[in-house]
Image 1 (cartoon, rainbow, N blue to C red):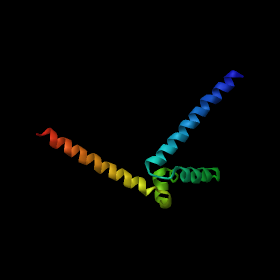
Image 2: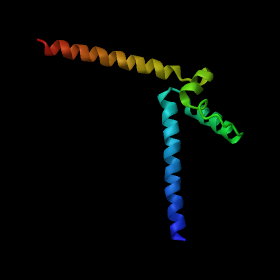
Image 3: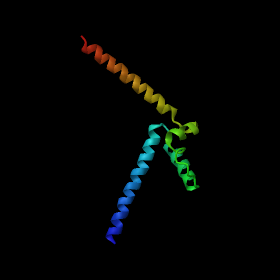
Length: 95
């Protein structure tokens, strides 16, 4: 009985890791994770066998209304700020 319980715990940990990986991929592509998971899980439960289209990058292109553009703008602003800070540091180190 204990072995069955332990093996189910191991499987649930692996399931949680997969779900976290999928959610992190959606986050990386600035996709709304809830909309993404809802749509993909419904399609897979409905019998969709194409596993390429539900990947976050392709899904974002097919569902632009669920792409979080404000996150993309934040990312660009952060990159510009870091670039300016590095330029200031280089300038100060040359003195």
